[in-house]
Length: 79
Image (cartoon, rainbow, N blue to C red; front, side, top):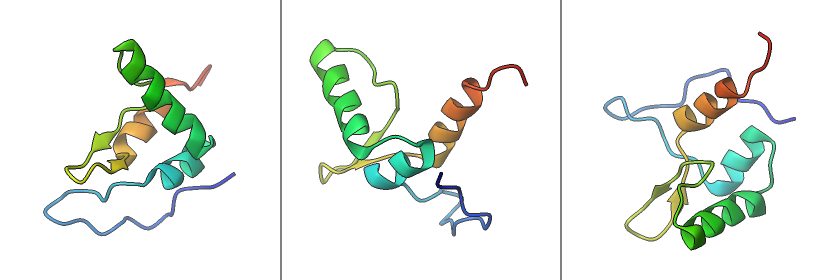
């Protein structure tokens, strides 16, 4: 299973870099197509996606590391 780098990514004015769909999928152990489908279904149903993302002005999609880590922590059972 992929893992987060132990070194902190470089930040600009305290802003963490955004991850591509493929990078985000590797971190949470899902496929990029699963995340694409999550966005598609949410848009079609008018509901928020299960995995929050940032839509860039260029139309690209990115994921924040903090959002992904929060979802992982929220799913921890029995700790």
